[in-house]
Image 1 (cartoon, rainbow, N blue to C red):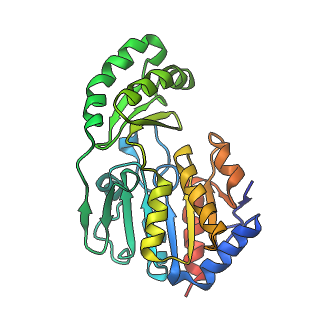
Image 2: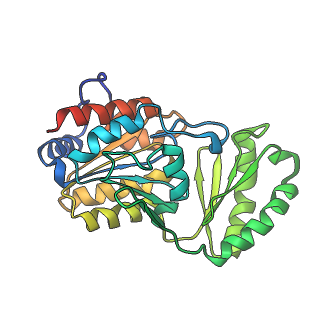
Image 3: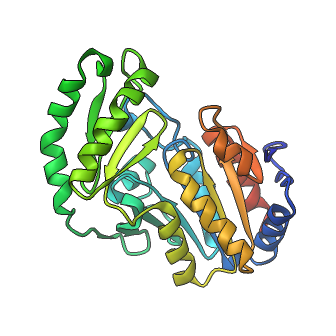
Length: 285
């Protein structure tokens, strides 16, 4: 398990040699480094209604302090890029010119420097799934009571956090949603009381690797909190194996032990991530 943060003014010491090399390289070569961050659960606290999610109150301040000192900050999220920008409060903020939002697992992109959003049309299978999902939930009956659908444009998610029995609903819906996704050439991505149906071949790992390659980064930090962040963790591990140092940060959650066990550093949720970003900004010139 990764180390816990020390305090608000000091960077924590990673528990692995690879993590320590990643942090040392970030501090030595900040302008060749990419800081990559998940949104929900990492920059924004998890809330019962995802439409009410907002970035931690100090997140933008920390990002504006750090962004000018690094090659880029990339927010990589399953949300539509425009939604993450709005909920994050990133639009029109001086000092965030080095920030990009890679939405829908990298299928969409928003650049703070230009304010430009690029978003291709969703695949055909999404429309079919969107139409059939209410019937699938109805067929699940009382076992899925309280589950609800979130339309993400290029993906559709079923949340069970507000269900009468969240974990039971999650398990009851997993097989029928997987069958539905398969029929329409999609996949199911499980998360913290959410099952997301989306196109295959796009995930946070693919988005991160492509962006690191685009920037030519010599170091990458990635912070996440959920199962959907595991591909990004794997991407950082692969980059480290090929000679690009990296640091893995877990925005701590007892709900997802897989990330905690692989992280170099564990912080206390979005508040801890913000403290880490602020401490990094204060350590760089």
